[in-house]
Amino acid sequence: MSKYNKADQKKMKIVKIILGIVVALSIAFFALGIFVRELTYSSEVTINKPLPEVFKIFNNDEKLSEWIPEIKSIKSVVKTEEVKGSTYMITVNNQGNEIVLEEKVLDFVNNERVKLFFNGGGMLKIDDYTFETSSNGNTKLSLITNVKSDNFILGCMLPLVKGKLAEQDQQYLNNFKRFVESSND
Image 1: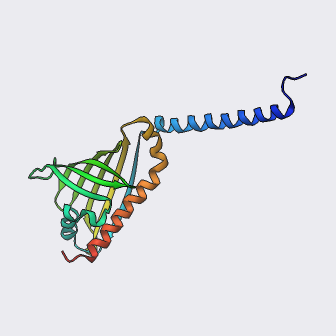
Image 2 (image 1 turned 135 degrees about the vertical axis):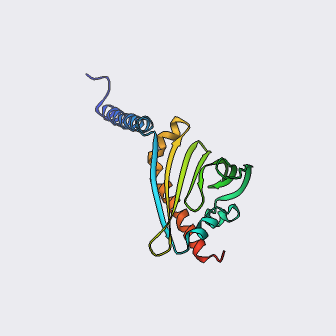
Image 3 (image 1 turned 180 degrees about the horizontal axis):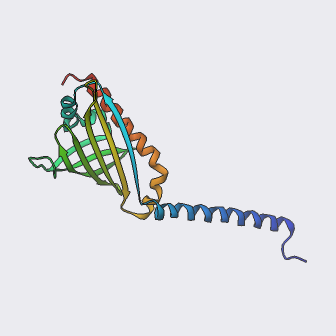
């Protein structure tokens, strides 16, 4: 005769199945961090204003919080004459928590390109913005984003939040479009 009755055996089988599922999900979660080291995605918007005006507003730090509302403050740490190499400390409100990001300008070509590196909150992010004049005189603003993590656990989560990150960056570009098109600068 078995040491356990049928009810106990059924409960143990259910526990084993649940543990198996938990182990499988854990392995899958950690495998994400091993196989997916970084994310790349793009966003784009066409703005009904001329490129020089769009570029000027885009690079006005005092207007940044108009289209990225989470920004609480921007402090210049190193400011270079050619802009490239300039560094800033940006304080953002992330769902009620303040996070300080270091921003470094990796490339700056007037009326063509702004490439920024952000480090903070466990994420390393490069935003590469390009500006082009479209055939009808409007401005096409494109963004290619690359995101990595500086720790393994956060890296495991990156593939799970890629859609949210891409959606947020697209929303910022849409906010910028609305702000520029309503602006009289």
